[in-house]
Image (tube, rainbow, N blue to C red; front, side):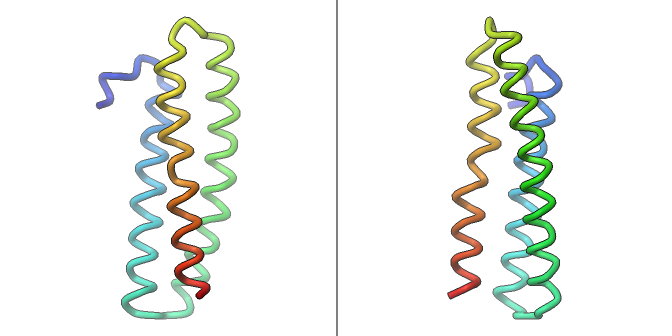
Length: 98
């Protein structure tokens, strides 16, 4: 899949999206199975850190998309993959707060 991306920022964004999804899912599964309050705190801190890093990356991707519009499809795929974590995070947070 990484051969699809020629720009390093797009590769970074996809790695970031996969990493955030993996770590978030792991923390969610640990919290659901063990119900340890410290994991919940770690999870919320991770979400705040992920929001910050993903927001900055999204901003850089948007600028890169405008500057290098000839590869528009590649940039949009990276943006969509980065944004795909938002509904997953909302689902995890709603599941834990119910």
